[in-house]
Image 1: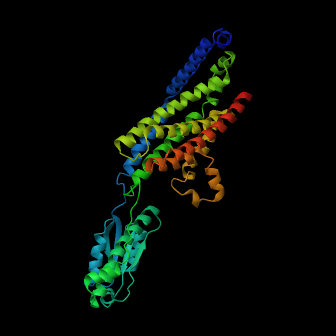
Image 2: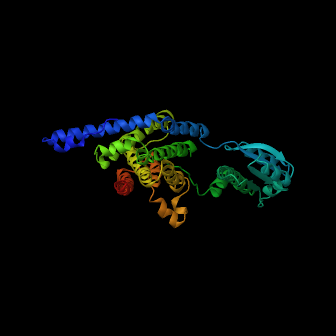
Length: 400
C-alpha cells in the first residue's frame, strides 16, 4: 500500500488544489476500505446474505399471515340437538378447527396436555333444556395458555363465536315468550359495536414482524462490521505505515466510516426492494424519507461499533461489546413488548439506544406515515447518539 503524502496538501499555494488532493485521499481510503471488507470472505457473506436470508426465512414462516385452524376439542355432555348444533357452529368458526370430540373433561385435559388441542369446549348436561326455558347456562371454554400466540388468537376466535351464539340464544328466548322476531333482535342488539382495525386491517403477522426481524439481523451484522473499524486497523502491519505517512487520524477513520455506512445502506436496499416491491409489505411514507430515516440509524449503529472498536483490546472483545448492545436491543426497543409495560429503569435505558427509535419509527412510518415532524425528531435523536459515540471514540483514538 502506498503512503498518502499529506505534506503536499499542506504546502500547496492553491487552496482549491489542496481540497482536491484531500478529497482524492479520502476517496482512496474509502476504496481501500471497500476492498478490505470485500476481501474478508466471512464478513462479506454475513453482510450480503445475513439479512436477506433472514427476510426470506421470516416471510416463509409467516406466509400464512394470520393464524387459522386452531385445534379445538369438544366435550358434549348433553348430546341433544341444541348441543350438536353448537358443536357444528364451533366447527364452522373461521379460525377454529374441530379435531376431536371426547367423552369427558379428563380426556379433554389429556388432549391439551399432549398438544393435540389448544381450545377445549365443555357443553354441560341439560344444556338444551336450559336454553329452551330461557335459563342461564354455562359453557366452559378452556384455552392452552402455554403458547401466547395461540392463546391470544384462540381467545379472539372464541369471543366471536360466543357473541354470535349468545345473541342467537337471547333472541330465541324472547321469541319463545311471544316477542316478534324483529323486536327481539332490536331489543337484544340495541348497541352494535363495530370493530375496525386501522393500518393493518387483517391483523397480518407478516406485515408486523417479517421486515422488523430481518432488519434486526441487518443491524446486528452492521454493528459487527463496525466493531472492526478501529481495532481492525491497529492489528494490521499497515497501521505503522499509515501512522508514518502523517495522515490525520480523524480524516482516515472518517473516510473509513463513510465507506462503511454507504456499504450498510447498499446492503439494506435489496432488503427493502424485496420487502416492499416483491412481498408487498406496507410502506405508507415516501421512499426518500424512509431511506433518510434508515441512514440516520445506520450512522448511529456504526458509531456504537466504532466506539466499541476504539477502546477494545482486540477484535474479539470489540465484537463482544458491540453484540452486548445489538443483540438485546430489539427486545428492549418496545417493538414486540410495549415500552410502557417495562420497568421504568429499562425504559430509560431503552431510550438511549438508537434501535429503540428505529424500530418504533419503523412501525409509525411504514404503517401509519406519522409525518415528517415526528420522523425528524427520531432522526435527530439517532444522530445525537451518533455524535456522542463518535466523539467518545475520537477521544480514545487520539490517545492511542
